[in-house]
Length: 413
Image (cartoon, rainbow, N blue to C red; front, side, top):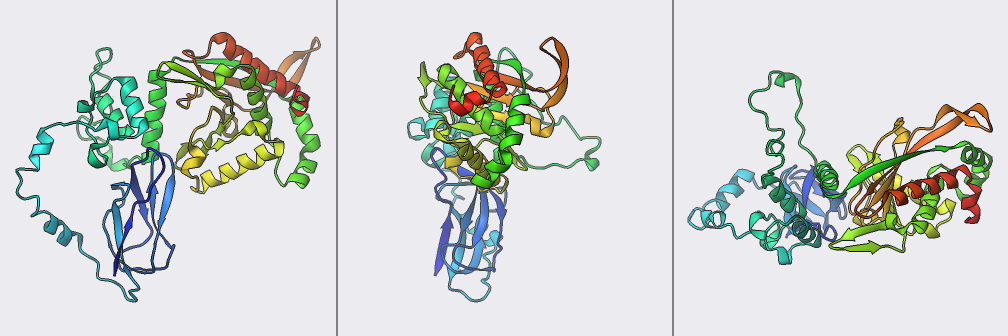
């Protein structure tokens, strides 16, 4: 009996994925729950497992191809002991080709741009189309039943000519043969990388983004950490890092200045009375921002364990859609890579992101004397449509106060 292996549901508003890698080939024997392939969405990479034991009869789609949720990936001959005879792709294609051969209907849909069915599309696509004023007729849908994805809306948006910058609309296509093509390598952008690029550009285009800076003396928090880290690790089984101090300091600031924890939805401001903190993690596939839920009710050990678990899952490619969904505020630590100063980009629809940087000894005036102190620059990028400069500065000052006097965090002052 031939069993179809289909693309599983991938989470809210995710309608398609890319076949990143096949882990089997036609003729391979597989066991129940054996991984067959990796699917890459705009958020995570997920494995598709065999639902039955048997032999791979054929692979319906190739690596790098886009697939819709519910689409067939491959067939398994259940219980087959030997290698199945793969169905040649060439034989399958001609069999399907004669059917469309009455070529009259095929051009008709292409010639009649009915546009996307926005009403039935996902909320992300609808919201983006409304915000950007993109009409349904301008969108070429790739989803089932004429439904548009967020990428379809972005593609339609990029095709609309801009009066302000007509030349910038055409990037990267080479004008002709490249002189040093023999010493270049071309790699197709992953769906995750394309999504990162689109989201960062969207943040620059839609938000009134500014960045304010401050610096923090790390002397006291480093001394407290050195004093407590061994006992902390013995008791909780987790390493005491600086990130838990910054998470707690940011939550103190968010509670005092709720606009920094808000977002814009349509013509309304949404103030959130919960604190889901995104922690940016670099992976070989790109930057991801898993979310630490209800960080305000976690103690230091809970924060450290939560961040550690999310970091491991990110590096192992095991993050789920739920791990990446939502988030009210983001912290990015470029200091782990040696960055001394940067301006982080917003993580839409959030209104602010804190950038941490490298700790460096610098001469500072302390009590009228010049002393070497371990200093860190802090950067807060924020959406000026929601957050005023006063609020942004006060937020950073509050974070600075909590880090320079960490006992405040321990007693909730």
